[in-house]
Structure formats: structure tokens, C-alpha cells
Length: 306
Image 1: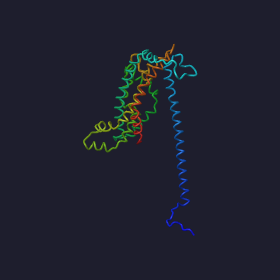
Image 2: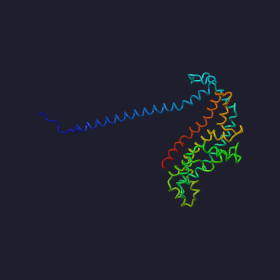
Image 3: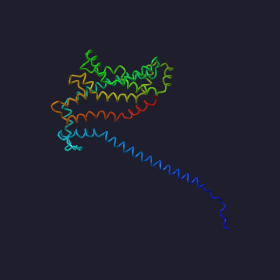
Image 4: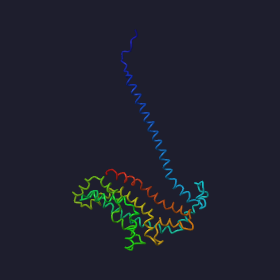
């Protein structure tokens, strides 16, 4: 009878081996499933991005075409010949330098008004306790549900009686009084994420309430302020209804009104309109490209606390 080696051999139970292999298969299946979902998500995002970018691609392509080739069917996506002269003609066909300067002046005043007044109101709603604070904030939020077109006629009557028509006052002065409900809401949410111990320590050091707002909360709110600034720039740059109502003099037109002047009853220069529209979109893209980190950070941090 042969003798087995004296050293015992450690063997795993059959049940343990089966469980280990089953868990390995489960992990592999989960990884494969996760990979499939990641691939599907990537495909959906790429297709969605292409669909969203399609109008801009058509605009860019049309801005480099001859006018007779813009509306041919099927569309010719690659211009032949490529006509960069459209941009020169478009920006000299109308005084776009004046339009851009007028728009930037309105945007600058709105930036100062909205960032200053909205942050001041937001700090009050976020950090100062006073009777009816939540009720007043609810009223402020309720104004977001009122469409602008409902207020358009009463505002026009008020500003016309004040003699503010054909000036930039109706487009800038109202923003110095609150800065808009959405901006107040966004900044209030951000201020509520900051620890209250910062304000308590400042009060112990003898800082008043305005000093706490200006010296402590405003520097920390840079992401949210940049986010509000981006929204303000976009609204002022793309605003069409406001300048259309109140501006009459051609030398005071904004970019949006200047683009609309390319269309006339008799004839529309579509090639120049496409080139001018593309040129006016570029500042917005450049702004978002350089400020997107602060923009996303401001949106995310503003939603941490409700």
C-alpha cells in the first residue's frame, strides 16, 4: 500500500470553487453590461451633438457660398467656391462697428447693475433674518412665471411718458433695481452653501453686515458671479425685442437690430446675412470657451443646498 506524502494538501471545497467562479462570471457580465451602456451613451451623445450643431454648420457653410447656391437642394455642405469676401462685405455693408460698440455699452451697464444689485438682494435673502423673508422671496420667484410680453406694453407706456424712448435707459436702468429674479435665486443658493461661521468670525472682529457681504462673501462667490455675468452678456447680446421697442435712431442700433436690417421687403442679401450672423456668434463662443469652467462650477455649487 503506497504511502501518501506526510504533508497535508489544502483543498478548497467544491462549493467555494463554484461560488468563486460564479462571482467572477457575474463581475465579467456586469463589466460587459457597463461597457455596452457606455458605448450606447457615447453614441447617443455624439449623434445628439451632431444634430444640435447641424444648424450652425449649415450657417457657417452658407456664409462662405455665393448667394445663388445657399438654397439649392440637395444642399452643398462644402462651398465651391469658398467666398471669404462675404464677411468683408457683410461687416462693411452695415456699420457693424457702431452696432457692436452700442451693444457692448448696454451689456457693460447691465453687468454692473445685475451683478451688484442681484448679489446684494441675494445676500439679504440668504443671510439676513427679517420678518416675512421667505414670503418675499417666494414673491420674487413668482415673478419668473410672468412672461415678458405681458409686461411689455405697461413698461413701454411708463418709459415713453418718462421720455426715455430712443435711448438706452429702458434697457439698463431697470436692472439696477434687483437684477432679475433668476439671478437673485442663483446667487442666494450659492450664498447658502457658504459656512455661517465665516460671518460669525467677521462679526466678532467688528465687521458690519455690509463688510461681511463685500469683503467675505463676494470674493468667495466668484464662480456664481461669473455665471450670472455670462447669462447677462448673452441676454444683452441677443436681445432683440427691447432695442426694437425703444431704439429708433440707426446710429443707436444694437447687433440684433443690425442683423435684422439685412432683410427688406424687396430683397434680402442672404449671403451677407449668414456671414454677419456667423461673425456675431463668435464672441459668444469665445466667451463660453474661456469661462466654461467657472460657468459649470457656479451652476453646480449653486444647487448644493435648496
